[in-house]
Image (cartoon, rainbow, N blue to C red):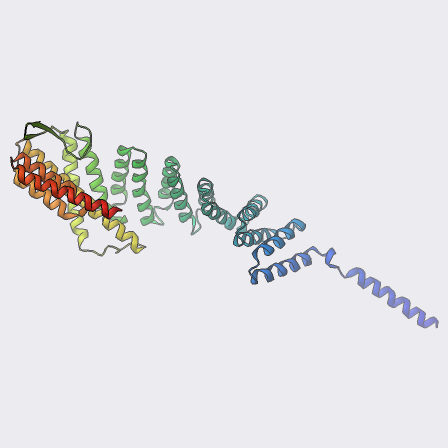
Length: 392
């Protein structure tokens, strides 16, 4: 009896000791987190995103000091994002970045938050986050695209100054590693200045583009840049207000019409003609190549080729303008030569057919051929109507 009692006492003590050593669920935070994650993962497989997000969120709230708490917050954000609970997802990503700013999960959360703001049309905030990502993680593969996104959204909301600053940063940061992309970025900056009404700055950027990158961004951009610089100088060389009528004054007396060329700034006009001729020469080299050759995306190459074709037509049109004005000033050429140049400019690209037909009519009026001029103006009107229908 005494021996049995002694064994029972020893056994009871051992059991009690084992019970004290074995942790319960409430006493082991790591076990609780593991169980919660398994439950959340089961909901993920069922695509029950809202419930999945709540479990991760509640798990973090209960165990904020868990070694993998950053992953828990990130997973909560992703689940809420997939549940289309944008506000909850952004809250999780923001908390993750505040609490664990140096975590790899915080880095991923920054991009996801930027994407969410873009999807919900919060473009200014999206741009800020993309800029922050590119600044904090410039060596990441997606840093260039993040900065490009920032430029696009800044441009979209009319914040051209910030868009220009971001573009400059892109060119500075990636001109060696991503040379073609940097070239495209610098080229696009001319459009940002043009949108601000700063055509002088736009032309300066295009000159810089030709000097720093040349054909790195493709020959199509060279054609466009040369023609745009030429147009800028051509327009600035004329003392008259810019318009489609060239640097010419029109005088009407009864049924007769007289044209008189206005003297242009010689230096600027000469520079413009030089750029136009170079644009035409570059376009001829471009004409025999595939539109998408050398471009990452086929559509990019085709769009640039179409733009190069239009600017090639512009260059030829302005060269014809120069011939017309020289003829009016009786310095060189003939009306027939000028009319032929305008006809060829119109044939070069449909975009310049209307303006070229109008100029042919002016030349014929100057020659004293009102009937032929009227026919040319009728053709101009017809082309204009067709173009407007095509645009619709």
